[in-house]
Every structure is written in structure tokens, then in C-alpha cells.
Image 1: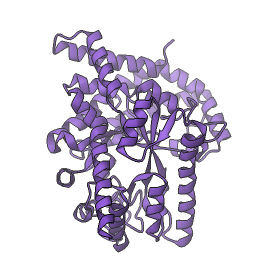
Image 2: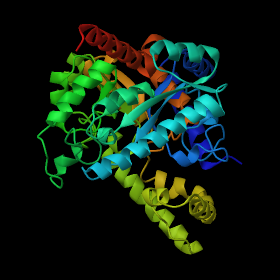
Image 3: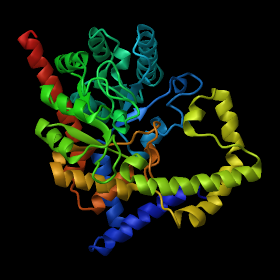
Image 4: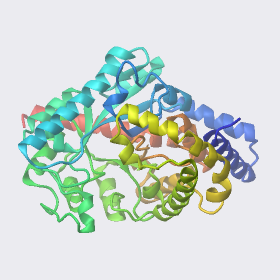
Length: 437
């Protein structure tokens, strides 16, 4: 019997085929075959995949199809070639003790990624440091790991750490996350709950921009405040990246980019990696769906005597506690599968791949196709109907084909634009180093 996920994936593909076929003479089989051919030929690259160190052990790791949204089996199943694994540290106190703890946490994640690629599964996945590495590794038939740094809090006060992180494979970094760092105000300050510290970048943050340009790390603008982002455009000699953001005009949340920011990004030569995160794609649709899902889940859980806990609370559980909770939810989830279509999807449909590609369309129309890419934010809250994990990656290409994007354009969106920015950042770094700055 099909699971709810596979059933809804089949419905998504069928709906896409019917819509496309109604607009032309292509057969259903022809559409799928053409889309699969394109998907196989282009390099598919997702710029934001969070990780947990507990998933990088001999007993539990990404060579197995564990319950992470991204792992090697899921990447193979969905035809996802490149995953940027994120060295993320939550924002803490701006103290020496906080910086040391953050740096230690960061090093654990760097080591975990290198352990997977260099020791555990070198025949299956390899770390890329340049665009040439990406193409070579993909051509070899292996998956590609790249490394991102989310929240420069872990850098501390010593800018030499930026070069250290670059040496470990870090190829983009954001200067803030949820909360103001020593480098930059965060977008979270927009609510007024966290008053801005710098009205943009701190003096140290401005120095960090120059140092990232010098060593060849892409500046990621997905989490800093608008003032900080606009200052980065002014200061950076190299193109920047929004590693996991969408269009604010379509979903009014503070982490999305408004049209002024997007036009500045175009002028800068950067790229926005459209993110498949429900609220960033359609905040109202997501809210209604989540409320309906939560109500049904709580109702069913109560019938089975189970207390539902949130995703963040689950991350705080030990591996054994998490396993026990998931086992207790199995009957709840099985019951939900039988009822969710009639009681949730019929009245409050989920944010889906079509909604996601609406953002790509908007961004392409506004700033040009050469400035638009794709990210998921998997294992960090991302995932939508039709692209719930890496195994469903083909559905994004299918939707792009349905809307008339050519193979060349799809290749640009999936990876070409991001790799162009990486090349340019590395070229600028070589220039700066030659100047002796």
C-alpha cells in the first residue's frame, strides 16, 4: 500500500502532467521523459541543508536512509547532485565564553562533514571547493558535499578564523542569524523585540566583509537586517548570495528579500537561492494548513494517549528519547494518513511545488534568470508538498519544465548561477591577494 507521501507525490506529478498536456500536444509519457532527461543532465544543487552531528557516527550516518530529509540514498533517489551542509551555531551571548562554545560546536560540524566524505564514504560523496570540483565529482557519479557557515557568531572576535574556516571548506557565510551577532544586526530586529545594536553592520562586521572578499568566502545575506544587507552591497567587491530566501512581495516575512534588496542584488551580480520553506513561500496558506494539521494530530494523539511535542523540542531530546517518541507517534501518523486528505487538504491545502516555483517566476521576471537559484532548508524547517525531502527533487524540475523553462535555463537555476558567483568570488579573492591587501 502506498504511503501518504508517495500517494501525494504521485498526485502532484499527475496534476503537473495534466496541466501541461492541456496546453500542448506532448503526451504524458513524453513530458515525464523530457523532464527526467533534463533532470539527469543538469547539475542539481541545493545551497542549504542543516545537519546534526549525531547523524555522523558509525551507527547512524548519511550512507543510510535515516529520517533526515537529506542523506546519500535520498539524494540518489531524487537526483540531487550537490548538497551544501551547513555549519550552524545558534546565537548566544556576546562573550568570550560564548564565542569559545560556538567555535567548538562549529568544529564538531566541520569534522563531521569531513569524516563522512573523507573516511566513511569517499566512494559515494566528495567535498567540492570550486566549481570545477563540482563538475568533476558529478561526472564521476558521486554526490557532492559543499560546506556553508551559518551565523558568524562562531568566528568570535578574531578575523583570522575566517581564513581557517575557508581552509576547512567553508564557501559561504552569513554574518548573523536569529539574533544580533558581534558582526551584524539580524532580520529578527524588525519585530522590535530585539532593538538593533548597530543599525546594520558593526565596525567588526565591515572588516569581516573585506576579509571574506579576501579569502574567497561568499557573503550570505539571508539572515541579517535590511540595513546590514544594503551596507554589504556597498562594501563587497564580489557578488553576494542569499542562500535561502524568497520574494517578500509574495510572502511578507522579514527573512525574504523585498524588491529594493533584490534590485540591489541584481546590480551586485549575486544570486538569490529561492527557499522551499512553507511560511517564506506563502505565510497565510502555510498558517491555515498547519493549524488544520495540528488540530487533527492533537485530536488523534489524544485518542491514543500521546502528547504531541514540537520539532524544536524533538531536537532537544536524546537519540533514545526521540526514537521512543517517534514509535509512540506511529499509530497517530497511520490514523492521520487515512483522514488528512478529507479533513485537512480538502479545506486547507499545503504549500506545494507550484507555490514555490511562483517565487522563481517572480524573481526571474524582476531581476533576471541569471540571479535566481534553488535551496530547500531541509532539516532546518524546509520542505513543501512535492519536495518534502531530497528524494522528491525531480518534482521541482518537472514544474519548471511544465512552465516552459528550457534545459539551459533550468541548468542555470539549479546550479549554473550559483557556480558563477562562486567563480567570481574566488576570482576577486585572487585579485585582492595579488594586490597584497
